[in-house]
Image (cartoon, rainbow, N blue to C red; front, top):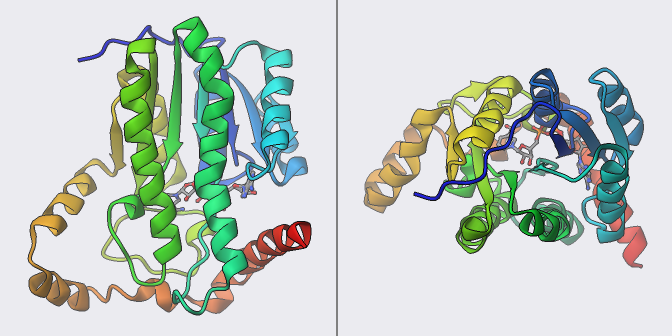
Length: 284
Ligand SMILES: NC(=O)c1ccc[n+]([C@@H]2O[C@H](COP(=O)([O-])OP(=O)(O)OC[C@H]3O[C@@H](n4cnc5c(N)ncnc54)[C@H](O)[C@@H]3O)[C@@H](O)[C@H]2O)c1
């Protein structure tokens, strides 16, 4: 087993993308409580600053789709707090709907935020970590990176990509003292999951994911499913013949991401439409 140079969260510089709200905010809050100095980057810069101010950290404007914006976030944070010891790639989006019902701009936005955002973050912090022989990157993937669901095809594709990216880079950088972990939450009680009934999958609080991120800094595990027992699900599904699996899927009504509560999801859907539109405008 690889042993990595330990990271003491007290005084460590921790960067959290998408940390203005939801899971990212819970991660920033928990790590700040352990003594870390937290820099939060978010598309919602005002909310990032407000959240960070309450934690004694700094908030920054960040669009993870834009490498220049990500580079500015990392250099501002390092100028303020010192070299990055932990990067939590948390920013993510989850538009839902039938594959043919979602538009190409939304597909592209999903891949750019969820996949290229993570790649960019890793490209920016890895050289410094390798040079110092120490560091940790925690990618917030999803159980959807292992288990396909109707209504989430492109989101599934993006999270499968993050799981593969994490596993391969982990192999490459282990000998350089840098660990890379994927956290795989099931459903979490945030705006991203609003209006979708994921039962029988368990829905956990954002702090449960923060707990896993904190644990990853200490144990440097390859993958951390949350809750832990859900990790067995992907393996069981792979081993189950498709006809049997389809019976179970029908029984648990596995098409609920296709049938969201539109009223409950309206605010999130409008956030997704804005984010996809911004990109379309830029690329015109
Ligand atoms: N909520 C769930 O059920 C769930 C389950 C599994 C995995 N996840 C993953 O957890 C992560 C966080 O999700 P959440 O539930 O907290 O969502 P959320 O919508 O509550 O928060 C996401 C944050 O990311 C920010 N963001 C979005 N696009 C951005 C961009 N281009 N650049 C910078 N910041 C951006 C948003 O402004 C927001 O503050 C995501 O990667 C998501 O895929 C969530």
